[in-house]
Each structure stands twice: as structure tokens, then as C-alpha cells.
Length: 266
Image (cartoon, helix red, strand yellow):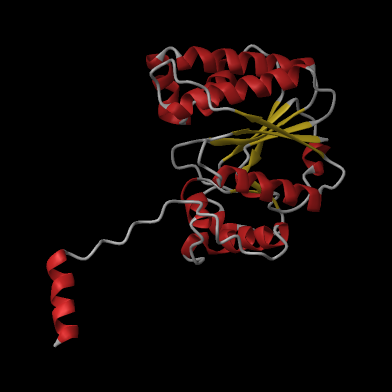
């Protein structure tokens, strides 16, 4: 089994690098014999006029597709803001070509594409080819994208939704639940002993990178990430790294400074 992740080298943004470091450590801790493959690339130039993250998602999925073409082993495609909480090898105990994580609690968005499982079958390879083809088409066809984005959200997920519903790949697609395999916002307050991957996304990502105290529905997830971070760094707190910009202190007005000086001299 192997895990592959793609990270963009954002200039002046060490945060995703830190998330990747902790993710790598967690995989080595719980899956020491699993091959962990990192692809680090420069952020693409936006030539489409669409949102930057849509362009990034298109490039990431292209790397996933290309990797799948030559895959000969069971593969987990993962976002770099993940955290392994135990071994994921049993994901491949049941028959499928491709497996995705569908939300345990569905409000609007059916699934999260941060974790995808794939066997090295011809059907899986056709799935990834079609997935990228539709994704790239959506990137350059906003109305087509919006039609599927309304339900599935994002770029890769919108394309996944189309291929899941209308694809001609012939792949057997299995639905795993996020609470066990890719814990997202609806699961953070319900983590349990079977949870395999914790997704450090959205507000949770901002909170841990800002080194906030654990609280509320994020408390347990934050504590888990902080503990793994401490292990990964040998218990050292890298306080010198300013992972997120902090608000500047508002300077005192000149009149206030003068009045203070006058009081001191009195």
C-alpha cells in the first residue's frame, strides 16, 4: 500500500509544509511499512480567470491521474492537511476499484474528496482519466461547473459528482463514511476509536496553525493534532515560526503619548 499527497510550495506560507510534516510523521508512526510519496510543486499561474483554488485543484488532480496510470499497488490519495490516527490497511479488505468518503451527516455536500482509495485496476485508471477530463472541462466551462458545484461543492468534488453519477468508466465505487475514514467538520466532535484519518481543514486548520487553545467542537481534534505535532518535533514548540499573520497593535495617538509624558514629568 502507498499514500500519495501533493503540496504546493506557496511562497511565504510555511503552514502547509508544517501540516505535511505532521501528516508524514503520523503515517510513519501508524503505518511504518507504507510508502509515503510527496509531490511538491510550484503553484500554477492562473490563466483561466477562475478562483485560484480551482486552478490548484485541477493541477493536483492531473498529478493524481498521472500517478494512477503507472500504479501497481493499492493507493490512498490524500490531501496534505491530513492526520493518520491508526493504520488504514483494512480499507482494502473489501472489493472495490475506487472508494470515496461520504459525509456522515449530509447537510448539502455529499462527500469530501480529501481521501480517495484506489486499486491498480484498469477500471480505476479509466475513472481517474474521466475524473480529470471532466474536472478540466469544468475549469474552462463555468456554467457546467456551477451546475454540479451547487450540490458537490469545490472543483474536484464537483467533477467527482458528475463521474460518480454519469461516468462510463465501469469502476466499482464504494462509499466509506467520513467519521471513520476522513473526519471532517461534521465529525470533529464525534471522533472515536475507529477514526483513521482526521482532516485538518477549514476553521480547524486555521485554529491549530494560530496555536489557539482547544475549545468547543474543535477541542478533541485540536488536542490530537497538537499532541502529534509535539511528537513530530520532539516536544519543541516552534514559536519562532509565525504561521499566520497576527493583528498589529494599534499605535497610540500622538496626543496620548504627549499626555503620558506630561504626567511623568509632573
